[in-house]
Image (tube, helix red, strand yellow):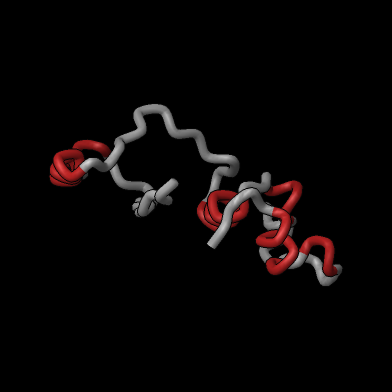
Length: 87
């Protein structure tokens, strides 16, 4: 089975009425999600969650910690290794 090409466009704090030109991407097969929910209230842990498939409590990047702890269990490398994504 052929793997699809995936493009993720992430826009932080963009009002929908200012993103109308992005609707042209729908003509090329892009999908617009109407009800996306972020796992965190700010950008950094949300991005880490998006790319690892882990919640902030699992990958260690959250309001009280901006960098992963020094244990190998919660490092960026192990977060990628334990995530359901492939690169």
